[in-house]
Length: 186
Image (tube, rainbow, N blue to C red; front, side):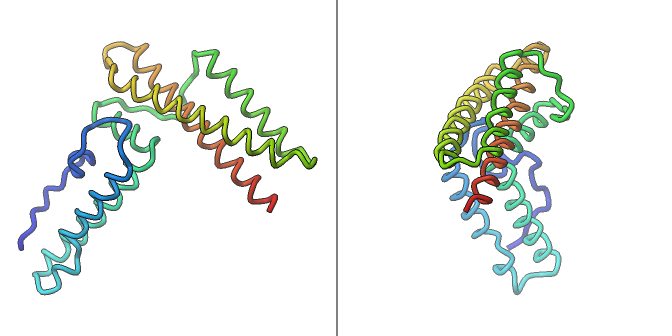
């Protein structure tokens, strides 16, 4: 079996899935398994050194692409780069006061939970966790819609998408902070 070295930079193409923000993660995992089974380095034990190296590089690429596509933030960044939209999420300036107010409320609730030492702390954490999951799921749907209607020539369209992505990053960070609080309580 001979291998070509022209691997796609488009991870959606590599996995033969649609370039969409919302994807089926179970199908993605299945496609990863299929790709790795076809090109696993162990299948090239009796091949040339170059074929072994290419098989190894391909397996590394498949695993890296899986990691990018599995995570909504890195998947969104990859989609943005494919359409030529480059930005640094850390430097996004919010223009939506609703998003900012929501972030201040979430930050305040999280700080309150961290300071709370009452027996109600667990129920507060569970309610807050559910609220965060709801917020994240709503943001995922908004981002998907933004990608589907994205107009690269319209700055309000691109700015809205950037703000939504930055907000998703904020929400997932808040979720991981809450998980740290939960672990420290055990």
